[in-house]
Length: 174
Image (cartoon, rainbow, N blue to C red; front, side):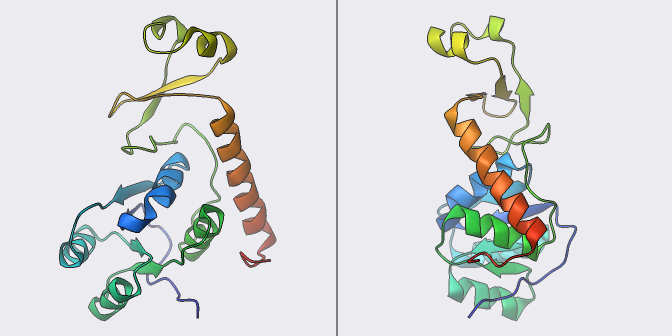
């Protein structure tokens, strides 16, 4: 049985439990702030979600039930491909459809991505990558570099599929 999200639209940031690392990365790439929790016990996660007023995304039914009892916004997700999880979160919290934009965040740390100039990257990027790719970004938080390669295109296609499904208002299995 599917569980409904507690809470409402207008959510600015989320907490994702340890099991949702991939979802957290993809949500950040869509420009959504996500605090991915690792190595924290359930009680501390609950206190953090309550104190920050951030909805908790979880695959742990027991943790979700504890959120329900305490009035903490939450969404129970099943262990499905990230496409279905994204669709579920974006629909449940009435978020605008995901897309790459200037608000894209670093998938690793959630920092802001800033366009990087090729001329400054020769010591950090393989020469063939510099030659083949034209778009580069650097995370203002952790310094990680990104470029418009095959992964970039796969993520763009995934977001396009989620947008189309949201526009069609068809169930994730449909």
